[in-house]
Image 1 (cartoon, one colour):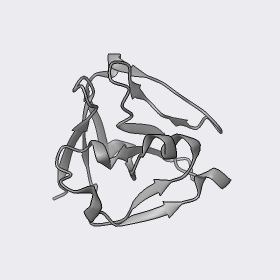
Image 2 (cartoon, rainbow, N blue to C red):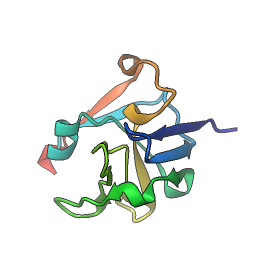
Image 3 (cartoon, rainbow, N blue to C red):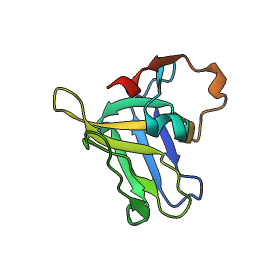
Image 4 (cartoon, rainbow, N blue to C red):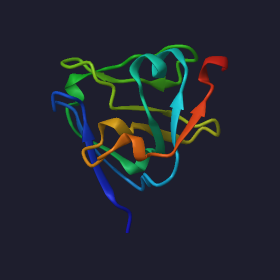
Length: 120
């Protein structure tokens, strides 16, 4: 059975759960203007594996560049704990900022793949 992770923003207004996320697999550190400035570490899951539990009314949508990913952030604390969009094949996905997971004990233990989003 897949482990369920809980996560959310800093102030606690936005809460979600995600299943099927294996933190022993590499996460993505992207150098696009958004990820580099926010320090995001991403793991991608199918949209069906992500459930927003609370705080939808606290989210502000933000689109940039190709405008295919909704980089939602909490209007109260400003934290971007997840994003939603489509994979290149058109399937819907959620991009989880693993730094916002409640059970992430040590970010230094993650296997990180560096992605050159700046060149895309």
